[in-house]
Amino acid sequence: MANIVTDNIEIKKLRCLLVDDEPVAIDGLIHYITKLDFLEVTQTCFSAIDAEKVLKTTEIDLMFLDINMPYLSGLDFLETINEPPLTILTTAYSEYALEGYRLNVVDYLLKPIGFQRFFQAVSKAKEAFNSRLLLENKVETIEANLYVRQGDGFSRIVCKDILYIEGMQNYVRFHLSDRSLIVHQTMTSLEHMLLGNTFFRIHRSYIVNVNCIDSVSGNRVFINNKEIPISTAKRDEFYSKVVHKNLISK
Image 1: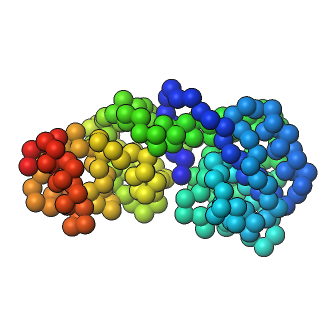
Image 2: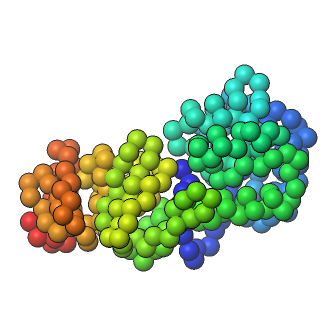
């Protein structure tokens, strides 16, 4: 998932997978990628079936995925991946755009692809990857700014203002002191990015900002008058790492 963008971090090269059944299309992408110092071609494939094998064995940061391919379309393939890399769809057919954004792709490029439009798309991917790199390297999240995708743009969130995060299947709801935002993101991927001294996943459906907890009682946490359950599986770990370290009072 790639919904979050942050500020002020140096980015490494994004490892790119190019998936298209037309060799000329792959050659065109390679030509553009070689012009940019923050991208590198890691692997190319002529089908989604081959791409699946690559994703199982190779670290990929950004995938350029054609939609119209034999046997398995790019859209159908993308829906089968639990944690897909950042993805830019490429196609000659504009009618697939809405379906592509439903799958939370970074961007949607219509063939023939001009360099300016290509650059816009990969710049979005670079920003999204910056966010993931920042948080996975455990930079102090309380000082970080997040930008979550809202329609065609992004909304800014200061991490310390997050009260708790609620999971809703393939979406999450950020609960802030003054508003809430729904983002297409899984709790598992968000957990890997956010958890640390500030955030704790107390239940499969809830991640809480421990600095915003008002009180704890048994298997319940209270934040801003909201009662949030602590799962049995998480209770001992929560009390050990949060309550007993005096971040809050038992």
